[in-house]
Length: 45
Image 1: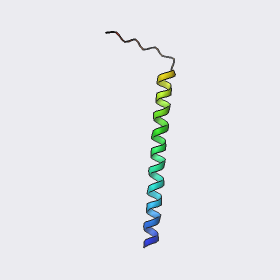
Image 2 (image 1 turned 90 degrees about the horizontal axis):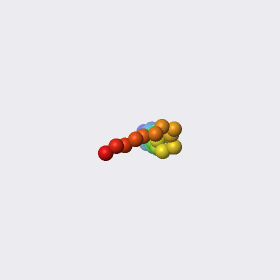
Image 3 (image 1 turned 135 degrees about the horizontal axis):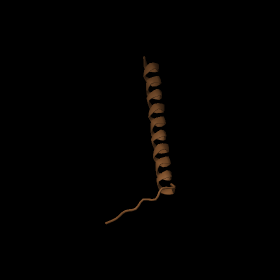
Image 4 (image 1 turned 30 degrees about the horizontal axis):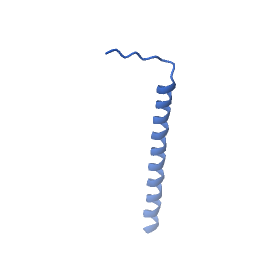
């Protein structure tokens, strides 16, 4: 029983780590394309 709980904790920890890394990667890719993209944005006030 204790072994199953340890296995579940490992799986949950690995899953959360992968999700966090994916979110960081997606955010980084979005920011890089926004900052260094080819499009020009004109803001008028």
